[in-house]
Structure formats: structure tokens, C-alpha cells
Image: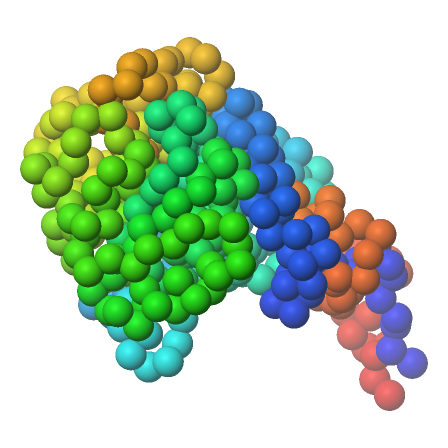
Length: 349
């Protein structure tokens, strides 16, 4: 008879369906706020983490990446792709899954979908950074690029900062209408605009999250007034930018992990002596974030593995005592650890 797997070798797996159940059970805005707090706690212990730029396999169609990290006790990685042309095929431009493992044994602790979870953690990271960098008491934001990330960004800023007004623009009016429709009943006042210039008029936070894998100028220098916070999250690969470099010359720029951001972020346009501040230093009080009301702050966010680590660990804690997961038999577990062959032989019916 085949050997039944022991409970210790079964790995919890959170499917897309169960991730959605978890979000609805916790509440979307509550989950975004809790994720922001979890990510901030890990930024506060930044120096404990193994850090490396994500490992990318680039092609003319997109990129496939692995994003690993560890705090010495728990290891995590995320598999994620970015394929802008997928939208034309009716496919997601970004898909992902992730894993947590015990450093002491190497055994997996959790396997989960991360397409939805990445959207949640990206928005939560944006809101966490804005809490340190945006004008105090900010109530309005613009979102340029109204794809899969837009609604999460708006609701995270609402949950963490108290944003009440959102202005939208996308070159695809159907994307803007989708976002406006999805935010109905959210408590946000939402306005669809016919240009990026119209969208950013009078707002305190500007989020750029376009999907095209190319150098673009979503915002020009003359469009950006004093005192705003720019949350630039669309840049995520070499050659892809959204801001005119003159904006960066006027802004104080904050990044996650410089070796990755220099390759993938807005700062890839700038000389190597361009001044940047690592966000973890602001979180821990080692560096200033927003200093005055006229300062332009820029969070040049490309996403980093510690944010996925935080999200994975959060999900693991949240599914405890629930049925929002399945147990997968993916670890061979022979009665005698050295007798893997014998386990195989005994499995013959």
C-alpha cells in the first residue's frame, strides 16, 4: 500500500478562490491597512534581511522574475511575470505565486497564489510610504494608469491616509470607466478625467501605474507643482520609466533597494551621483521624509522581496484556524529519511 503522507509533510496552499474568501472575511480595507503595518514592521528591521535584486529573465515580450529573501528564520520567494502584451490576448499582464519556508529545516510552510496578493501588497506598500512622505492631511490623489492595480491603490490610500477624492486618467477610456465603476460605493469621490494634466490638478498625491514596457513620459516637469507626493510604481524593468527626468531633479527621491531601483526604477535615467534615500531609513527615523509643505517627494517603487515576505507571513497568520487553504502532498516523507527508494518501492499497488 502507498505510504500516507504525514501531517508534518503537508503544505498549506492558498488558492485564488481561498485568497478571495480571506480578503472578504477580513475586509479589503482592513487587510490593506494590516498589510501596510506588517510591511512597515519589516522595513523597521531591514538590516536583518538577506537582500538581492530580483533575478530576471527578459525577453521582447516581457520578463519572468524570482524574488527571494530571508530574515534568518523564514525564507520566502515569489515567482512573478510582467507581460504587457498579454492584455491583448485576454490574459493578466502580471501573475505570481509565492512560498514561505523554514530556514532551520528547509521545509515549505506555505504555498499561495500571489497575483491578487501582489496587488494588495503593492498598494499597501504605496500607502505605507505615503504615510511618511505625503503632505500631512492629504485627502486627494490622482491615478494615471487605470489597470489592475488602480482600485487597490485608491482603497489603500483611503484606508491608511484617509484619502477621500480620486481623479482618474488612462489613455484607454474603458480602463478608467472600469475603475470608476469598481470604486462606486467605496466612499470615495471619483472623477474620470480626459487628460493626465486634468487628473493631477489640485491633488496632493499622484500615482503613476502604467503597464507598457517602454520609456514614456506620463508626467512632464511643468505639470508637477510644489508640495505633492509622487508614487511612481509603473517602472519595474530596465528601459521602462514614466516621469520626465526634470521632475526627479526637483524631487527628493526615496527607494526600496538601490541596486534594484538603479536598474528598474525612474532613477535609471539619472547619473549615479543622483541623491536617493532608502525608505527603511525614514521608517526607522534615521533619515527625514517630508520636511516641509513645498517639498516634492517621490517614491520610486519597483517592488522588493521583503514586501512579499511580509505579505506571505501575514497570510500564513491569517489562515490559521480557518478553512481558507488546502493541504498539498508535495514533500516526500519516507518513514526512514534515508530510505527514499524504499518508499518508492512500497508505493507499488
